[in-house]
Picture (tube, rainbow, N blue to C red):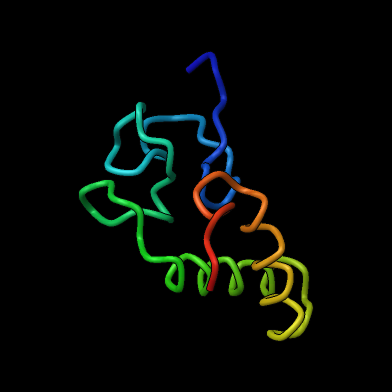
Length: 84
């Protein structure tokens, strides 16, 4: 795939069809942010995944990982106008 796209929900690079939700390269969301049909999961579910990823990859506390996840997601198209 020539163009690398970023998931509009979490920012993950999507390089191959397997990275895209539902395996559809026209999907704006990655496999981690979507259900089996390629539909975007609820905010709370994506947030929990982002929090876990941040805690595991950086070693910060769960509280700090949650803050980081919320801050990062607020900048992305899927959640920019979302108010939790």
